[in-house]
Image (cartoon, rainbow, N blue to C red; front, side, top):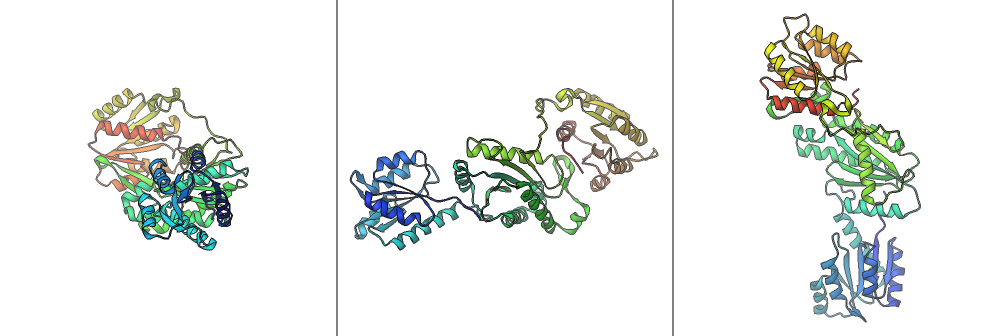
Length: 449
């Protein structure tokens, strides 16, 4: 797997700087050699070295004081400071550590010893910059890798990857189980990556890859397939058979939550010129968010035509984009039906009311509302609320309608198994109901299979 090229800055007399530079370049590092602290300061304004190798004594000053200066002025992650000291006096070397050096070596030093010691420091630095859960490169190494890609003349593609519904998974099975799932995703990404690909782990379930731009979609599809094939091992048999989780919120509200899936956003340097590594991360993340509109594990790339954003998304759902969301209320209790109609109308929705499941089915077929709010207890009619739920979910043209079951029936799992997207136990708090409805309708662009 590809890693960022380490950067080393050498500060020494001209001859020694050239000699040490020649030795360390053979380690695969990018080496910058200067002969004064002033030159080093200028260079540090635009490079971020992993390690600084400097002489203890320079014509212009003391290397120990320069170590002290670097510690005080360079922001994290600070480079490793290795001081080359000609003196073999133990007290002199101890003094160098007190001034801030991370290591003190002899000067001159055997070239093989120098190379091995520097490589050991770079290895340790890489470990410190890796995510502790997955051991993959963390945010600082991701930044370094992106910055190197952006100044290279080689094209590349970047992929932002995370898990859908990981929060609910953690709430259901615990953080330890969630960590195991995240580690499994990291293992899948590492397995799919080629030798010249980069895999990084930003935080939690947020991963990042840099790959060749010839066919990143094929790699994304392989990631989705491999993860889907192993993710079922992280669920009890009953949840797999049911096909969803049940999330419990405030006030006893239950939701059907799909099983864990992957969202991937892909951007390419061949499509646009990026100004900074943050620009790349943000753009890839935006496409990842677009992929969450679809069900299951999927990816979206910047080479695909994208829908125009809704300029009125921040307005009330009932009236965004000039469209009033339609709600069908199926409620046998007259006063409750009137209360729901008035409350939802005040929120800007177009509301129809019926007390019959049979009438509701006909209205759904002809009017196709965005959401149906229904009571299960419709037993005095030909069809009850449970049957209506199942019928709507079995109909290809109607199954995308959001179904909210607001009922006094004590078995919330029965409502969700019947096909309801949300279960609210009666009596419920009206503001909570309105908030839940608003949340569902804001997700109405989601495509459900």
